[in-house]
Image (tube, rainbow, N blue to C red):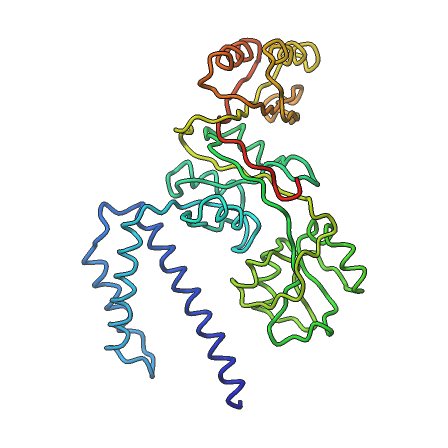
Length: 356
């Protein structure tokens, strides 16, 4: 290896060290949920002793002790701050993580494998909040998430519309002219179909767009790139070849923030779920309640009931506050007529997405 190659390798190692330090701090915040107090002298002593026992040739024990005393001090510091742990489904760098940070930059996004993992972690208190996609401007409602909101005792306490923006990402050392294959989620590949066709690239589906970026960084396949958000470039040390390669710049995903508790602040948008005895007559009667009260519905869709296959569950959004007397009366009337009724939440309506 020449000096240039050695320095490139040093840069990659430095990058991994910072990522691992971030992971260490994230785990410290998660551990806080299960500790009676921030300082645990016995545990800190155990960490230092464990580190000193690692048989590495070049890392002196005095150095590792000093380093980890600093790391422990930083972990203590972050545990004393009011940082909310917010679970999302997908790899770090996913559109959901971008939306979380735009919603509140003090939130700490925690990656989860599945939507149900987010829900269960919020329910058992491992996470303060969860972030879930409920609607896609291209695909419509996210069925799995809507079913979870219906089935579990959680509340929507906020929402955001996140634009779907994609970029072509590859390894820093790759010449973009040599790219032949692109990896991403099937939906992202479809939304960037024009760019892929114009550049004569082979599209290969991957389970997740951010996961594709991580795979490119770790596996380093030849002549390959990922289609993902620009945050992935920073997280996985990739180079941005071109931004905003999606065919339709007005696409967005609507995410909701979920909590074990109702929103403390008064909202201006409500979401409810209900089912009826007959999908037509009873549905019409319930919708008439809103019409007579001059409350406009902003969204309505139906899902097959998972408890009674002969019935549908209707998901309805409307503008209004559950603390308003007129809305309270309307919801009481809906509850009386419905076979099943649930207030999913009352929260602040999201601002329109860019281009929405």
